Image (cartoon, rainbow, N blue to C red):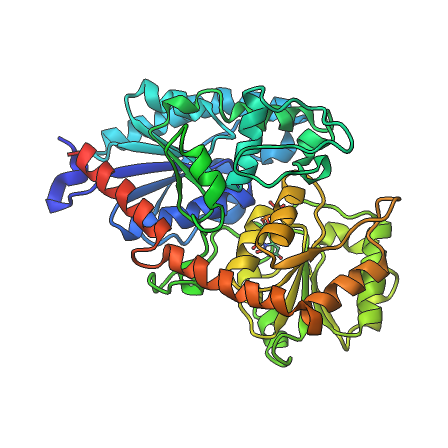
Length: 461
Ligand code: UDP
């Protein structure tokens, strides 16, 4: 008997398997919540290490299933190289995922569909081997996915020449330095380059392709990609309470693998004037050089505005000596914060960001003007869109030595926060509204999610 339909419970069961890093788990978890809200049964499969590190998850109706990447004590950091990690994850992951699927079936809750992260394409082959439906979930922008696809298909051939104009259908003309770093700095991270290319090796077998974006945001490239595959935008994957407010309990962003939640930041922000604070964060991975950290610190001192700066513990030593003490009247330095709480706070008037895709979507969806300081991977491409396509920010440019200097940082922050950045601030408000509309009832992303759920329900009958 198909027990997903026992006890009058007419639903389908989706197993969701993210690539196990925070920037991939959190958006897919938000997607899972939207599916669960539309009555799908959801099992989120996490590696044992992630379960240990995050001490589980308060996912409401979402169940957690455990698999292994072969590094139960230390996760990715335990592997000597990225290649070793990926090879072992595939080997041990295939075995433990098979066991999980079997256990769910034995317990009377067989899986109908697997939603997987294309960074681990073997999951699609495994799902198909079991005769299951499968959906790919791309966590990066559709523009970046399209660029990687064109590299995979051979239409775009790195290395790119300096001064070359790169033309990819559906995208504005791009300079090489506006391309993802794995392509622009060809050979810089060969295994990461392989990983982003390999996403497409078996994609033809996927029944659905979801991208964490929304239709109006990337209309041209979504339409272009849709000629080849049925690409569906389902984002932005921001907890409902920050956007449409339809999922009443949905404020948690998900797995916080860093510091626990505290109210330190919001209490501090609450004493500040509307739109007066600069929020600075470079995400969970990027490491600024000492010189760059100090240029930024000098800019903040010169500006003399209130600032909230996330400096991860591993980066603290790069700050100028006594910086925290000397700026304590104006600034708050924390090792981690609830970024969405901060961006949603009325006191925040500017987001200095590395333009990771999650941060970009969050800044845009919460209407905060941005100063882009991209570091690597897809961040330059995201910055290009922030600045030239959506026009919600400016790009703080590096000089010929590769550093973004104090003066440039001050100029950019003043531009977005003060008088002449009016257009940018107006656009930020418009995009905030469009992001909300996309996920609100009947919006483009809401419809795509709804169609997926109804198709799955009818297939599993
Ligand atoms: N983030 C957070 N607190 C912080 C800094 C970052 O919650 O102090 C979250 C942020 O909201 C985003 C994620 O971490 O969802 C970072 O993802 P992104 O894609 O922007 O960058 P990555 O860390 O992958 O480089």
